[in-house]
Image (cartoon, rainbow over all chains, first blue to last red; front, side):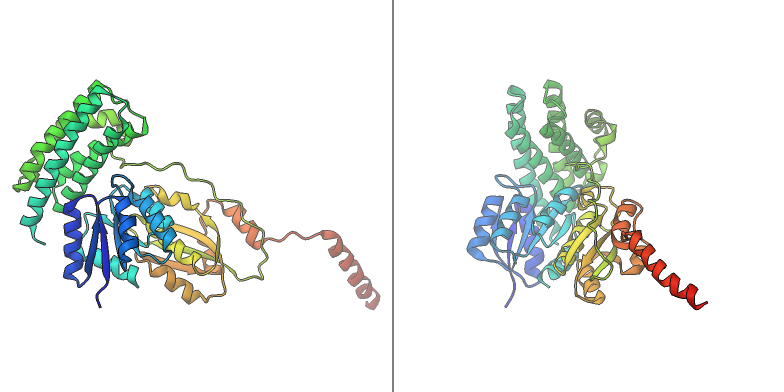
Length: 120
Length: 277
């Protein structure tokens, strides 16, 4: 059975690109979220094996969303999708419970490597 | 990757963000204190930057990035959203509007935003011009090390993140998380807050109290990826960073002894030795 993924990003472009990378590698994208609030709600509803999380999103940012998700489920596997220059925020996300990160612009292989590490 | 499909997506979504930017700039022009407009502008620039970077549009990425830097300062209250700033941002958005259309048709490399970039940098300031959003605060000094005897299961650990790895601080935080899962971690040097600094070089040390074998510890730390070396035990001692050296090593390798019982012992032992001779 393939691993299920929830893709969280406020840009359709990024959600499409990440979904394409994961789908072509055999993952099943079961949901998408474009705000932090949606990410938390959809995580609780879908209980995916993996979450990819943007940092800058409206309503609730990715870090707060990670914190809420991990408080509810300490075993949640969240991969941060950050931009260059966001090291302070990525460190904060990891301290909040995120398991790994990729930096835009990323190659599909880097995303898949990180996903494999997160899923163990 | 299907570049044509992504280019079309990039263009349509960027156009939406440019439209939103113009609306928010209108709001900001009427009310320089409109914080939500500043946040929305920041997010729009950030999104355009991320998408352009993924498409490989370097010129558009740079202009969005520098505009984002300026907006970050406005967001932090360091720069005021006065009429001149709103005019400059409007100009930057106009240039981005032109840029996304050109880039999507394969002409990113011929774009020249130097005129507006120079003026953005002038407002941001020379020190911050190249800096990226959300500069972290100053690092805290390492906390005083707790006193501990050498007989317990504490070991020093020295970790270096691979040179050239992206965000070494984030990788270090992941490695530290792994260690924390295996035992009690103390005396992180430099302090974990230092990991957030852009200048952090990826080398750090800590003490861990654990009953796990060195090999298990090393494997767990290396599992986060991009780790160059893990040194555990006495070998890590020689590599301990200069910062915080005294406090940490005094705590782990020195013990305080009352000299009076030692004197008494010498006296007791000395007498039989003298008597025998």
